[in-house]
Image 1 (tube, one colour):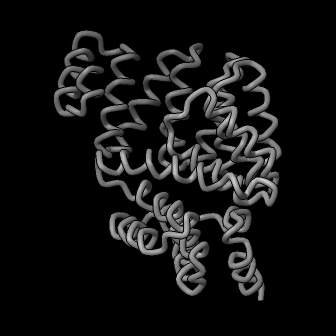
Image 2 (cartoon, rainbow, N blue to C red; image 1 turned 90 degrees about the vertical axis):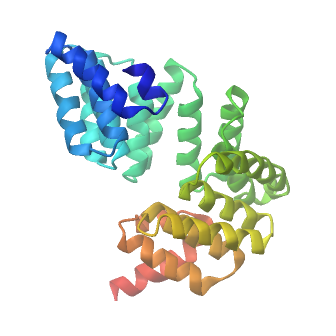
Length: 293
């Protein structure tokens, strides 16, 4: 089942996990495998039920709560994800994975000071790529761009294969006046790796990221092409709309940036977060003032 899951043969994986559960109906590993297959098939209600059953079978094991927390995080149910990660930490207080993921959840809830404390603890226990990247993102949204850049650099020393971190580093450089001259190299690296990702399969997130990177690189035609592609692929995705707003703002197209930001907010994006994205700060502030009026 796990092998078939990893190769995208989800129907076959379902059959194998089903056979496993016929042989051992209370096997938590088989339940978790089945839950992951349901999730990959978009059957989230069944996935949640199976993850919960698996966790209940092993109440003294942190793993079930951790996997359930990951499920909630992936479907943007951050409060419920936080509850599960804190249950993990009750059982295993020095679990760096749970601390890293909890820090990410707190970041998504705009609880930046709490996130920073948790991520710093995760790094003290186990200096790892994800924790560095997430902590740097917290520094970035708090306006500490030079510090964010330094931490993104640490993440890239551990692994340089993720285009998103190169893009994040470029954004931190661009926002820090003393480092702005270094941003082009980082964005070029991000584009190179993101293009490879885009060739593998259509992905709105990758296209929107490319749009932002090309905007930073002052390549407006390519930027608009990628932003339009992203919005066509995922017209109801708040994250894609928010990223598009950022790209248009960098291009200086304030009318379209404002329009996309309003769409993103209507779809559930955070205005508080938008205010902390340098290209969107002024536009988001205008929207906030008008809302108060």
